[in-house]
Length: 131
Image 1 (tube, rainbow, N blue to C red):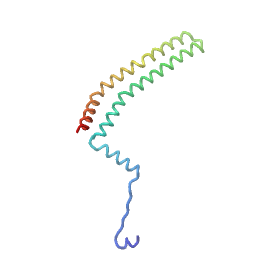
Image 2: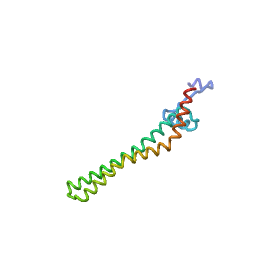
Image 3: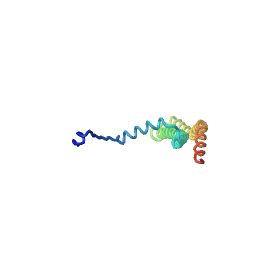
Image 4: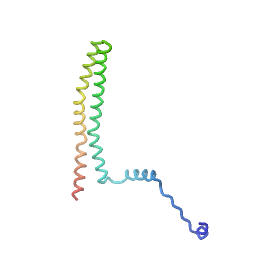
């Protein structure tokens, strides 16, 4: 190597690490024009948002209602608080009953909100596949 330096030749190479490559690729993706793969990812994320948010809210309401119903049962069976236990149990049953209609309402609202963009992306993807 010393002989190479004396002759005026020097070479060094350093490759970016895997983490650096991933970071550069993620920054690069932000500045690239939208292509077919990005459209597929976008349509999947929109579909997931339409379906998962109402489901999470519905499950949460159902769990809260179940806990309230359980509290009412505990009040009646263990603490001998019949009046407040029945009221609490009835309130929990009402909350459980409302979980499904609320989920359905949120689903319909999200579907209307995102349907235009989802249909537009779907048409673009299908047109690209024909060509």
